[in-house]
Image (tube, rainbow, N blue to C red):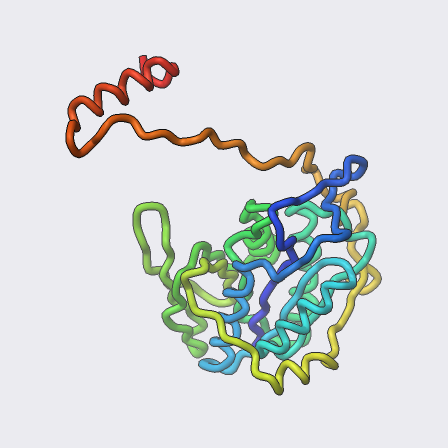
Length: 269
């Protein structure tokens, strides 16, 4: 049974630049890493392999240099890796990305049964958290987001039990397989690849698929299939903080000063 992990190569920098003509990410001269949330999804897939015997397949969509990141996943313990690489995929938003990834998962599922699809909660370059749910919707999978622990998988009953961390509370959920699970960074601690696996991964085969293999309509992928586009990207400006009064020696006076300051700035009426 397959545990498929979706990973993305993201800029290892806060200085992200956008091409003014295409409104897509400028990759030249920027170091890239595996999305930190996705590293925890991969680690969880590897734990499922150890505990339940899953075959771990890692998939990603990106330019040719994404191969090095996928070899890193193999060094960690993944059994195989598939890279979606085609100019037709370039400039994809979350809708078009989920289209290509879901079709890849469907193709892999024709070879072996898919039990679990794992994704990071979100990517650090987009922060939309939409690709995982988009894949689940397209494939009709049970969707479990913000998972901080996979408690148990019962392969006989085809059930999974997880704990989700929601705003202000946690919940324990049991759901049928196959499931798509997006994980938080608190779900596990990452392992380090061994030297033998690092050496083996240097020559490991990474399967590359273009749209010739997927046969998707070009109006549904890449820039053509993306109804949303980045118009502007910038770092948020934060005003300098200040200390008002002495909250320990004169708490009542400090509260009065704070209220006066907020009224003067139009924050209170």
